[in-house]
Image (cartoon, rainbow over all chains, first blue to last red; front, side):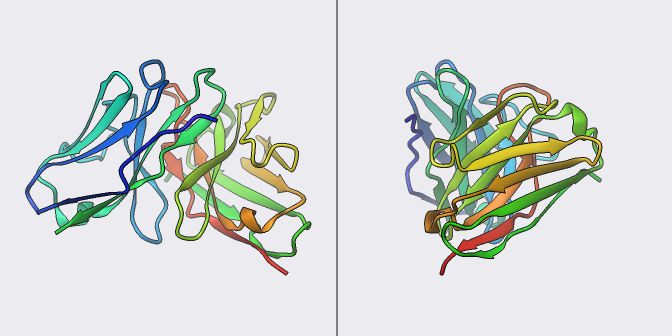
Length: 108
Length: 120
């Protein structure tokens, strides 16, 4: 089965830049998507197609891709950004959807 | 307002069945692919199934294949998930989600979820 690998946790101070990585063998061929999930809430899409930002998502959220790794960058982190973040993509055939294990972002 | 509202969750014994529903409003449901995603207590998101806009094409995670069936009624703007032969490991919050029309498998609108507990 196909897997996406994320670090379990990332910590940053307010105003700093947070970078959350996601690695997977098919990421050079399949787009990646990022979701933010706060406790007790449904996920929210924050980045689509590697680097596009849906309407309503703050500009401090950005995405990039390089080889088998994609990165979610949050510039000027705010306390409200503390949440779990999940990357998501598809397997090489484009049939199955897969999520990364999630990264807990802590704002110190 | 674009909205998805899940229902049908509850407590069921191992081996039992449940049917989840997801009522869509505020958008043209009949043109959208849809997904079910679940999240076990304290765990991460896990994709369960997806269906195309006409209901003619489906796919499932290996963990539910042969036990779960996704379907839709475009006349009623409703998505379904029939869950049979339920196991303890199926205990989770189940979310329905819309696949946006910018392409690729992803989810831009989510419901608040419905909780399924499989226990004797």
